[in-house]
Image (cartoon, rainbow, N blue to C red; front, side, top):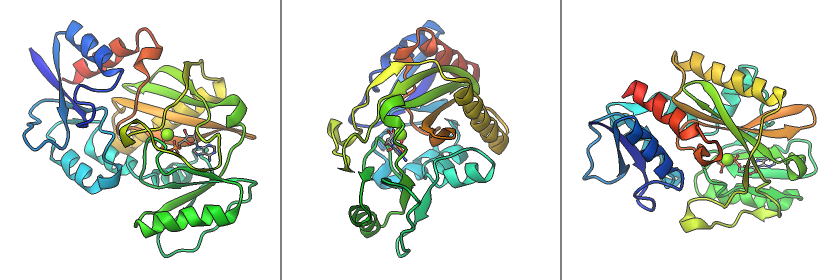
Length: 283
Ligand SMILES: Nc1ncnc2c1ncn2[C@@H]1O[C@H](COP(=O)(O)OP(=O)(O)O)[C@@H](O)[C@H]1O
Ligand SMILES: [Mg+2]
């Protein structure tokens, strides 16, 4: 039986809540799924490896990237992961014409430039699971969070708080093998001011998810992101999640997840099977 290695973290040794549906769909296609912890030195990565719930890497991105570079056959491939694990990619996509949340990147040692807004979001450029993301109504508090990130050696990102998210929510569009699969709505994550509290064994902040059909404008923007991505590496990514926020002028990209996203496989009947088929085609 062909095996496929599914990379996870030690807190979730057999994957996250959608992991079992992926395992079952792979088995139905005659593929043996094996969950392995990415930073366990005893593991071997001697088969197609798909990055899944490796959610503990943000504080040690260098180690994670060294691991990714060392895996012989990795999906998504190392160059995509290296580029995507720092939100600096938003500036690249914006330069390619993709509508993104206006963002000021502020590395340690630089002064903060605040975009024109009533409220701001400050977050680390390397981060996941909403950890270290804060919403602020005054510049003093925002500036303190920037300083805290700088003290930890991290680049801060400053964005306007796009408050339509409070009523409309965020839309996440999932693409498998470069094709649209399904979409979900995420409720606003920053309901309160201040830096987000951390829950769930430090891995992520709880999200409120429901299935949602994307609008035409959301589909068009997400398609554009996947095209931009495909032209970067020459092949369609095995998996991609495109997170969009509502802005007055239309949807904008807040995050592109091609490293270790939840793919919300449990929110669409056929999604796990579609993902398994795409994996099987590469195994
Ligand atoms: N500029 C913004 N305006 C409104 N909400 C935001 C903004 N940036 C982030 N958020 C909220 O915070 C959450 C986490 O931010 P995100 O950029 O996705 O970082 P992470 O990589 O930690 O998921 C988003 O899902 C969204 O709900
Ligand atoms: Mg996010």
